[in-house]
Image 1: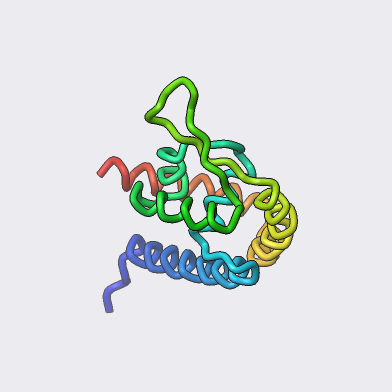
Image 2: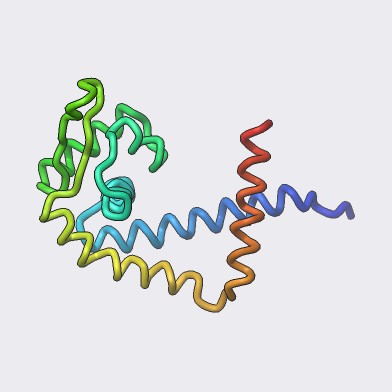
Length: 144
């Protein structure tokens, strides 16, 4: 019997792991009435501060059309505010409101704990090796 291609097995394992992680994230952020995309945008603004809307989509991997919709929703919930750039009229920034900051101050530590539970039992050296390996795979995929 022929041995399976280890590259295909690695791909399958990675995809299944990512799917499982997405489910953990989805369930965790749903407790706050958010979906993973909304949470990703709020998390970016929480950690990086005010960002050009045009770049948010690239950083959280959603299309420019979708980012407008997400920002609109978050603005209606009073979690985010838009601000025009005084130097360049083509640029609009998104920034957390006080309410958005308070929400993230509350939910992010709980989210971090949920993610820590997923990685429980995996030592630091394994995590660092995984990060290094996943980056290599990502760069290789981009260059093909």
